[in-house]
Length: 107
Image 1 (cartoon, rainbow, N blue to C red):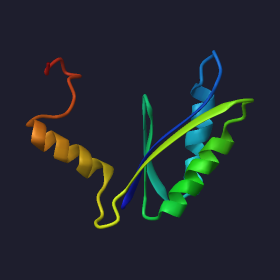
Image 2 (cartoon, helix red, strand yellow):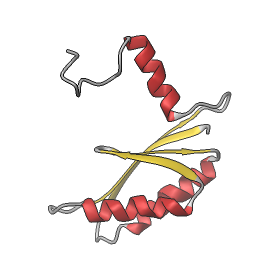
Image 3 (spheres, rainbow, N blue to C red):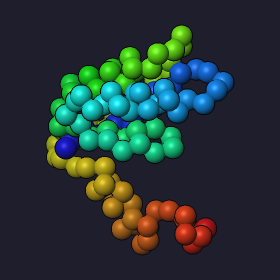
């Protein structure tokens, strides 16, 4: 995989967005992408930037609201392939520990 993106799609509403976000995430299933949702968005990996854009558009269109906010941040390394997990592994190696303090460790 060479194209990695952070996608955030949400309706602009006051209530819970969970159902709408679930619709956006479910729309990714129709595309040749790998994804992982976290509290701030969904990381998407694809071999082709066109497939990534199509998946992001489908996610955007899956949210049925009067107003939808979509943010897409793309890392397209064209000279070599990398994965999202490799990027996290590189930070972990530089940090000398997992890049989290969920177990109570860290600063």
